[in-house]
Amino acid sequence: MVSIIVPVYNAKEYIASTIQCVREQTYSDWELILVDDRSKDGTADEIRRITQELGDDRIRLIECETNCGAAHARNVGLDIADGRYIAFLDADDVWYPDRLKKGMKYMEEHPEAGFVFSAYEFGDEEGKGTGRIVHVPEKLTYKEALSRTVIFTTTTLFDTEKIPAELIHMPQVASEDTATWWQILRAGHTAYGIDEVLAVYRRPANSLSSNKLVAIKRIWNLYRNVEGLGLIQSTVSFTGWAFRATLRRI
Image (tube, rainbow, N blue to C red):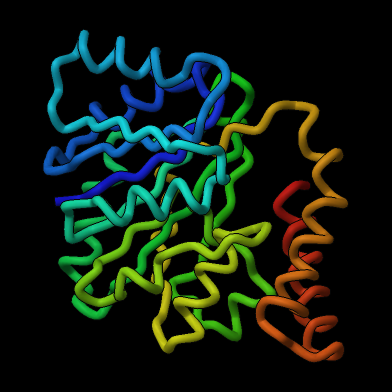
């Protein structure tokens, strides 16, 4: 079974479509764990309304007592997950119907793969694809990943019999998802890419420019203070990251 973990915070506008894209999956052996991080817009009530209406016992709502951020919410979901396989989905993103089926098929055909991710497409505010696609490599090692933050959280799939759950737990740092991929790869594992678009990354029109400086500060902090890389190695990795990040947005 695949345990799908969704951190939820003020996502009332999107949560119905999030649940719907999971229920439309062609792979049906899943549980959906929605972890509400003390939303202020009535998201939890909306989830309760939807789940009561659907009557689908594969969907669970977990409500955090305090707001602690997406990393904590994902870790809460991970700790109660019943599935061998773990998939992450953010509440404002969209999965295509074959996302789980193709990820599971890849793992079946590649027994060495415990960490799989896929290509994705940038979407507009409505979650519709814009035609801007981020392609992914066949494999990604730790060294390669330091200058290629190409792994998108909503496309990841893990086999906990190959990747220990403690490695999937996210640290409480900015850009916690990237930090998690690095800690998994640093432990000697390899990430395997499916170069097929299986998800849409919803991006409001005004979000790209306003987030550039924040992203730069976060990635530099990861190099220097989380990974403990020296100045030269950090600079080299950062240059590669900046170049590829720019290409993705052209």
